[in-house]
Length: 386
Figure 1 (cartoon, rainbow, N blue to C red):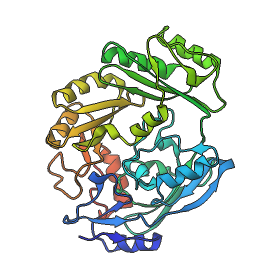
Figure 2 (figure 1 turned 45 degrees about the horizontal axis):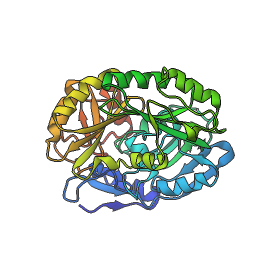
Figure 3 (figure 1 turned 180 degrees about the vertical axis):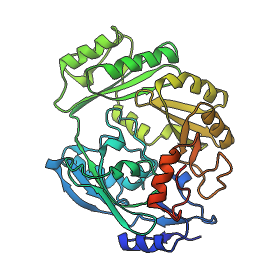
Figure 4 (figure 1 turned 180 degrees about the horizontal axis):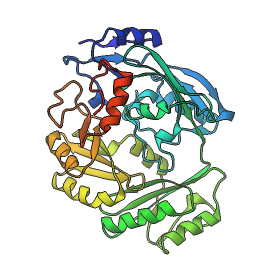
């Protein structure tokens, strides 16, 4: 079935009012969430809804249409010394801001700034074709029900975003990334917990299954010797540094990454996942990491734990049934979102692995169903609440 191409809010409304099952699609980089051409669900192509509607660097907000490429936003913000602090993933050159919000995934360098906290306003077309709006274009506007937060991670199941207002932050003037080994996953989790509590600007905390920890420090006003000393203290002497520069962080037990910009760029592109696996994002608590890691190891899945071990990024092998991962997650009361690989949209919801891109334990519950019923009573948006 060919996609319905929308160029503005009016054509989005027209597509929705036709009543066919729809899923909004931007750059298509989250390929598992894109309807297949031969399936029962029609793609609503919103990649033509592009452009910056409003940007006031002094207000630290930007308002954009959903099809605007993240690369374009990055360039505009960088020219004003600002950035998107939630570090949205770039799974392809065509990655868009609407796709980032709909997927609801905070990138590796967003430990201190989750995506949900930075969406301050939204306009969208609901399942009846009505234009709804909530929030505003300034941070202080907080009137009404917080619909912007509901749209984060909605995967197009509640409405079609036509405009977004986001908070932005000043770009750090100084950063340093340090990698150090620990003996096993439990020790790595302890180190991550200590760093997360440290009174220093840590913006990324990654943990490998081996226990290796990679931490990124940053500062808007440049390096602070006290930050370095506190960083060292929280590592019980495991990481020391030169007070003169963050970039000069060197210590006996670890190593400063020379090309840290490249490291984090590859991280937000998930280059390590490879072409033989699907990328699955699993929210979790640090206490759940050890048990999950053991199960993933048995299935031969590559994985990393980010945001201070509050999310698992899983490279699930294409050769392994996705049903196995869904069952594995459900057994630990976890859920996940499949972002890459062949389309999962429009397949039978009776199969626990093929309920669209959502796998594992059901989420949303009665509250989610009530919200979906209010915004999309006829079930136009494929899948609805889960």
